View 1: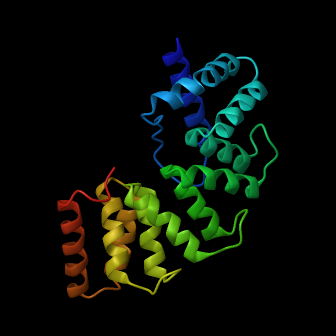
View 2: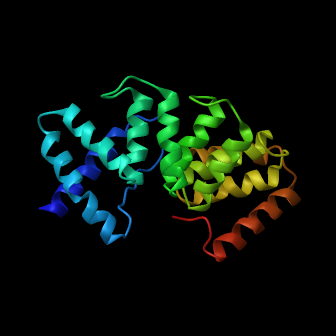
Length: 215
């Protein structure tokens, strides 16, 4: 039963992220930590039981899980504040919960925190911070973060403009099927020399050969 409730909890949380302004893949896993799972088991069970009849009750238990340190719950509580679902819309509170989860290594929280800094949503716009969080998510293999990092290098946001590095990051994202990155590659190639393109492709191939930056 506990296993079933945990799965219901994850499906519920995944559904909460469906309309985020980022075309991110949703991949949610509880960390492989038996003690943490046991401690949160009752919380997850209560979330599952309350979903069918009481959204507010479910939210209460999502918050409880977040306050107990579950980074998935922290991330999705941030999503709820970002979207104003079950709570007042509050970008600053969303960023607060994204940060808690991101600091635990949650890749989607890192991506969304990067977005917050990139857009100045709930935090002061800071391209250096956006780059930092995008990079953390990108290096974990998140294709959307890889695409966003490519754009930052192409536009010189938070880093010196570098088309070769931009192309490389777009390539990582495109290799995972990220359609926007494929379009970005077509566009950026028109700004690059053949030597620059060859260098970018070489760097991407070397990184892929080392199995880096892929989910």
